[in-house]
Image (cartoon, rainbow, N blue to C red; front, top):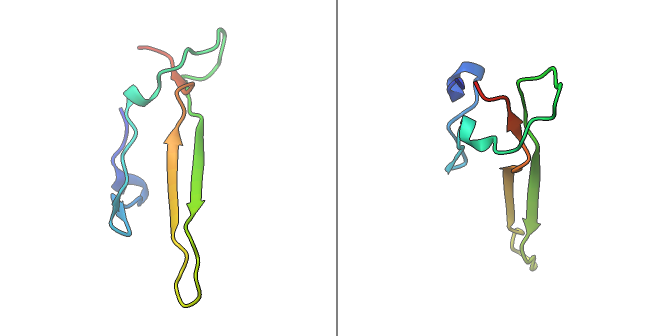
Length: 75
């Protein structure tokens, strides 16, 4: 069972963007045999800059993704 955002002071929204809490369904990979761990998460951060022109601020899009090879030991 995962804890809610507030347990660790993580806001549910940042700058108007909703942060999706993790669930066990995010862990789709197969655990390696003999692993001493019950779960492992692989993640990445993607970013993309938009056009920049004089007098305007550049746009920035950022996303954090859980990779499909993240795994957990089934209960």
